[in-house]
Image 1 (cartoon, rainbow, N blue to C red):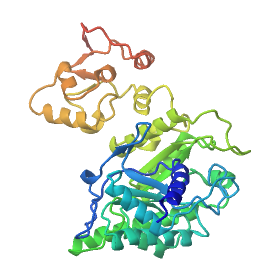
Image 2 (cartoon, rainbow, N blue to C red; image 1 turned 90 degrees about the vertical axis):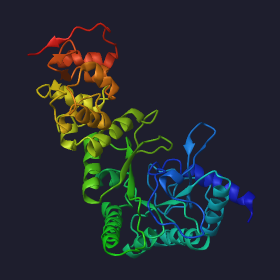
Image 3 (cartoon, helix red, strand yellow; image 1 turned 30 degrees about the vertical axis):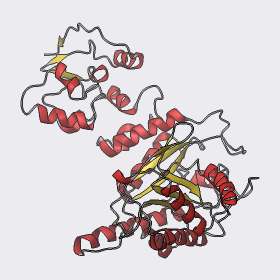
Image 4 (spheres, one colour; image 1 turned 180 degrees about the horizontal axis):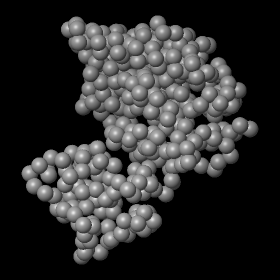
Length: 414
């Protein structure tokens, strides 16, 4: 193999892949091939660090940056002047194994531009996965891209080889697609997601009845949404995410702040990516997945976008002064999750610890509660330690980050 030529291709295709964030190095429960190399288990994924300090565990490249689509926001659009390259399935397999043996990676994240057609591109991805799994006996983690518009049969075949699939929505509404990616349709994106969901459900059902069942996307499916390329509100984006979690059993929705790497008449004129907005979406996504919030509570028609100064959970709490303060010794687990400064772990610890004895204010810190935030929304044995429950005052204190005097004077609300 001509490694000098391969290195040049890798330089082009790894740089072209950096805008895709819909990957993670989570493990899966796919059974390993006897006598093979690698391991997709979470504890089997090793890490290396790039020159800028980022933690890397997957070889993340495009198969090709050739693309028949001409999406306005994409650096690999058909009309862009760019160096183009393509790696054959054999070359990708050889590079993956070479990197693995050097202990650089433990898995592969392979995306691709749409080369010739969605089905043709997917056939190349299947061939790559088949070489790695069947010929090279590679047991490591493989995450590949599900190409919008691919037939159900090819999606099913690819799903038997990989640990995770991601079909990227990119834009959160049909109007946004028409504006920036008119060659794509909502149906072409959502239909493959439905096929993946059906395959996962069938695999789970068969596992209950049969001892040995070929795996199908055991680590689930993910997607990516671009934030800030269109005028869609945060509520629109979050409602789409909630629908994906509910209807296609999405494992993760990744949010990517729009990077103004290209220009166009339909693209926003911004100097830098809206990273804080992306961060707020991740915080809200966490509230929906782990804190029992729904999207209608987090954002409303009256407030369709996030407060960039304050996190979504604190904003919700300030909008509902009638709920607080909560008595930590009596509040339900569900209610504790809604207190700023109390997380999933600390809420569970509180519920467990108060079975033995009443909790004091000082004991909450040992349970993992962030008291500089929680103090404004809780009481302990009827005592309030936030000085005032006025929402305007609480907001000022949360934004200032100023610490209260250590010699606090508790105020009784009863």
